[in-house]
Image (cartoon, rainbow over all chains, first blue to last red; front, side, top):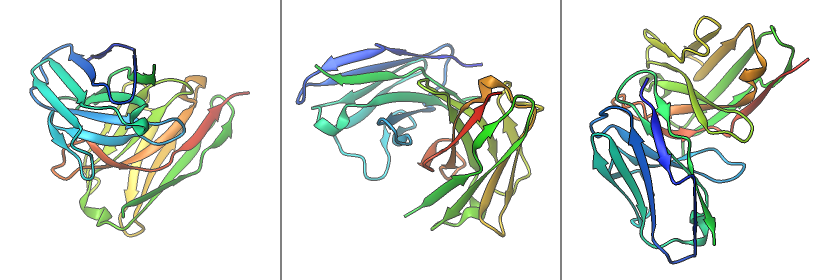
Length: 107
Length: 120
């Protein structure tokens, strides 16, 4: 099973700041990585797929990068609605796995 | 807009069974793979099972293999998850997810979830 490790567990930032979230895979997953945002009480929402492609309707302030085992989600300037939990997910191999999540909270 | 609506959750005793349904609308259901993902209270996301568009191939997490069965009825635009031999650790919100075309096994649309509680 491919293990995804997200860091940090919690990121405390202010609106307007830049957020950088990390996801590390236990083995290469090429570029087969997605990012999701989940707000309290809501279902997850797909943000980024195949490392760097924004899903439909996702603002340009969200960007993804990386390859192999190390991946990054960047939010260029945090909006109030961006404070949430973010998960990475790999589709390189079965079973599909998710990272443990990074909570982006208001400082 | 794609719409997914789960139902069938509830309280069940350990060892019991439950069948979840996911009713899909506003997309061509029969041409997309579908999946179930769960989230235990206060925890992260855990993939449970996936099923190809035609239902010919199924995939399961080790934690549910042999106990859960995913299926679909394309004539009814509905996805199912039959859960048997339920355990306390199966307690979670269960989401159905539409798989992006390819299939890529990313989930581009999700339902609102249905809560399953396994407790005596």
